[in-house]
Amino acid sequence: MKRSGKITCVVVALLIFAFAAFSFFGLKTYYGDREDIYVKGAGDIRWGIDIQGGVEAIFTPDVTEAEFAAITADDMADAETIINTRLVNENITDSEVYTDNDNKQIIVRFPWQSEETDYDPAAAVAELGETAMVIFRQGSEATGTVLLQGAEDVASADAGYVDNTDYTGYVVSLSLTDVGRTKFATATQENLNGTISIWLDDTLLSAPTVNAVITDGEAIITGMPSVEEATDLAEKINAGSLPFALKIDDTIRVINPTMGERALQVMLTAGIIAFVLICLLMVVKYRLPGVVACIAILGQIAGVIACTSGFFSGVNSFTLTIPGIAGIILSIGMGVDSNVITAERIREELRLNNKTIDGAIDAGFSNAFSAILDGNITNVIVALILMGIFGPYNDVWAKVLWPFMWLYNHTIGYIPGLAIANTITGSIYSFGYTLLIGVIFNFIMGVGASRLMLKGASRFRFLRKPTMYGGVKHG
Image (cartoon, rainbow, N blue to C red):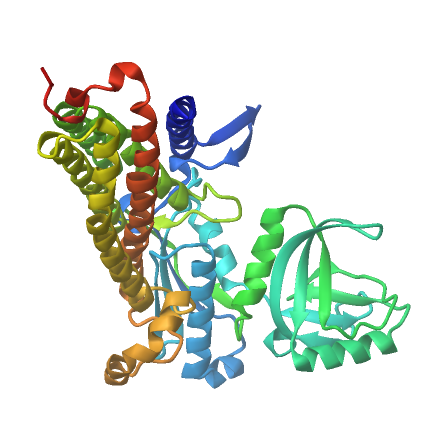
């Protein structure tokens, strides 16, 4: 049992160190000019406009004069919503999208991508203006009869991978609406052994031969070269098609970081110094529990970085702003507080109640748990409310909180399903997100991992001294 505890302590500590190393530095290989990223690190975080800068572009409808005059405020609102959705799908929450209905313009501001090196503003905004209309045509030519198209017929799209006798590779699976299912069943029946092509605007995606009547409302787009391109296409389809094509009306403007060019380096240096000082204070005052606390806090920081950088497969980098960094700092402060509470409880059990080391550790964590839980739950609730109110309109928490915001919604003319304040979504949402993730990892590391490591460390004979835990040396 004692040996098992020792091994657990070492394993947990090594896992935290390994997790921290990968979350901070990532895992990449280089072959000539090619870079293959296996695990994203802190360098892949997409920083907000206030830290890294970004671009501003003005879009106008790319249509004829007669069509331009017929565009309504509702059409412009639909276009703004879809652009917002495309930005949110890329986890770009630090963005601003405004509509000028008088001049029929949409002004968009968003930060650079994390991997951007040449800072090409034209490439950064190119995809936002694509109409992304999915069209099914008879035959394989662009002049073929339109069989299905747009959101009326296509309900959703998902990226995936198939491996069967007919095709092996990345695909985009389409789920059709009830109307689309009926149309597709009729189309496949009428074109049996013929061709039905799938287009995105004017670009041919695939042109499969119809081998059977399809009545389940499912279709597959093949030929995707990578999971990234399949995911990108699925997100464009899910975002919806713009009601009209957009063109860049004016010169794209590069936005300089509002906090200055070296703000990130200054904050990073300050953060490292603060962490070292905290660790020294914890170790000097609480000894072994302080060492364990430092490892747990390192794991908490690594967890927040991992959930922000896109460390986990299939998750894009989250846009991190100055308020987001404030959320990380606040959650780390809570992590320090959690470990201090536990260490103080353990010391009290040793000094005041004369318990054994094992008894003091068990009682210390048990007595501290309720206080730590209360603090964590409170901040989780606050973070979720901030994310729901100030988050993207299609965020799950926005939908959960919408029924409770009826008074505020009525006052500002709120539209169900839309964010309350798009202009400050990035700042507040980023703060709520990092606070939520930080609190979750605080609970995991400050309670779970700390307890495993401290109980395991106490199995080592040279560490079984009350003075190592803040207790009084027995004569």
